Amino acid sequence: MFQYIKIKNVVIISAFIVFIISSSTSFGLNNKILAAPTDIPKVSFNHNGGITDLSPTITVKDKTMTKVGQPGDENEMEYKSLIYAINRGDKVSFNFEDEPSQVDAFLIDYETDYSTLWALEKTPTGEFIANTPSPGLYNLDVHAIYPDGEYVSYSKLLNVVDNNLNLLSLTPQNNQCGNEITLDKLTASGNPATSILNQVINQPLIKELSFGIIDELNVQLNNVKNICGIQLGLKNAQNDIHFFAVQSSSDGSQYSDPVVFANTGFSGELPEVYIYPSSVEAKFLKLVPLGSTMEKGLGITDFKLFGQ
Image (cartoon, rainbow, N blue to C red; front, side):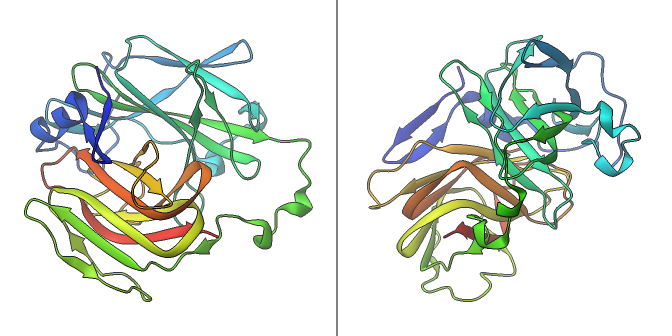
């Protein structure tokens, strides 16, 4: 089974993401959208008794990453009134033709300067809570890893509505994720170990960091902050799917359970913003690479932290 095992507060990933590292080292991809293979497992989206299919967008199988579709584009939707609508905070679930080993779900806004992914909180019953800071059109993305190691992302354009929201409250001053947080220390450890990259960071971090395969990236702040997410740029993100987990701690000893993210593959070389299901109070963060579709390790080209 796909599971997370925490040893000394480091997330160790098991078989299925490791499979992607070891077996997927080349691509048949030139930024073309190919017809979806007929053997891709189907997924449907369930909400309040309604069922609708999700469309596959990316597959990784047998050393090949293939783009088989694109996220829904609100600017190209001719009949916007026909877009499936859900209420902000509703619970949604998915039916899989083949049972996956790992499932993560996101609401994604591709229309911002940098594509922004809101990780959806998973309930004990296996449902996901569709929550975003404001109503609007979002792509519901499901990232699934199957027992044979195949990775598939699925997408569906949704209209997230909230009839009770006071739109006057949507101001920059009330945006709890609108401020960049200054980092104090940033340390990368791995094999071979990487020395402290910069003791005090009060300027743009770096032009490029190619870590190779590392154990973790450790972030320290000068005091406890309310953190809501990160901005992360990754090398070759257009042709590669990187998996990573983020853990937080207020004391540097006890860390939270990991929040798992993966880049979309549709943002070119631009960074993407990854937002937690809910903000956390922390002074320390760990960013743990879980594997990628190329055996090159995690290359970071941009890193920022957001919160209050």
